[in-house]
Length: 288
Image 1 (spheres, rainbow, N blue to C red):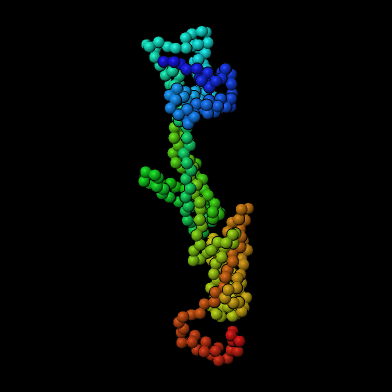
Image 2: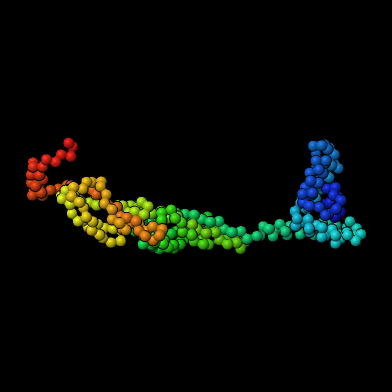
């Protein structure tokens, strides 16, 4: 079997050529012996096979260096460019084997695992104080993986927690991917979060709203007293500074209390008499 001179096949006079020069030579040779231009020519068919084989080896720097090293070691000092029957294919197979090792080495390179992204809900209270939560993730094999995460206090809705190495497994010794958990802060019946401010309802009786009062108001971390001016209306808002959510500087926003005047559904006999008397003597008409 012939240990082929790939440079001669591509009409190159020397091995001291660049990859770009090899590409140009390949295009010219492939065009010259293209099957569409040499219909029925068996010699051209064999020639184009050799051209493609030569280009496959010489167009890759690593395989070109390997080929040059073998060629120079066997034929640079006038040795035969052919091998005997007993050695049939030995040199070429050795060369192609080295090419295969290079390919396998590339395939065995470490591959980092993919990142995983998920989202979990948490309450305003848990986000304000910080909390540890257990979450369950299902992998591609259907197996459930339990992970404990720590939600830092003051986290913002939409922010992500990164757990290094908790993503998909790497291949060939590559590192695992990371797990990114997006936090979604849920409002509840008592508190609603808007930016740095927390909104809540301040429920008042009709006489508290009419006469004014000092009312106790629950905040996210304690209780405070708020001054209610007389004649306040449903929908009006009172601001309590520094009782809201934490901002990026560690300071707190405001607590915004929206007034809702509540009317009793059931009246005692005395209450009913008072309301009836008020109805008779009052000149107030909200519809006028």
